[in-house]
Length: 178
Image (tube, rainbow, N blue to C red):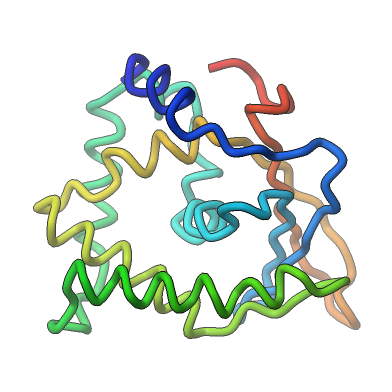
């Protein structure tokens, strides 16, 4: 897995600036995610929604069998509600959601993520499971581990207690080495 990341790191370097204003997103379930990736925020959201940021980063990058088991288990547990999913449809939907999502990313303060974005990223996951014959996350899981790590803090959101997940970035040397 390690050589993949050496190539990935060179090919997909995304400029994330240490002084970028953190953006906090509120999901339909009330959870909060704070990130600073304004170029590809959807990738960070995808990693978060699938739980990849909370997994053992070293194992995700160095243990292929571990990643394979996680991928198989996640694909087996997903509900195949949408039988008309296709790679083209997923791509069009993803681009559409990315365009819509640019507005909340530009807003000040906490922005709400609508359920259609969550559904779109779930469809993205399902299509990859279908294409990968239950090995969807073979690339996604380690990519998320390479991108960053997270910390969790409790905070008040309006009148409710909420857990905020704050993404830190490998490219900014904010995460332990892999």
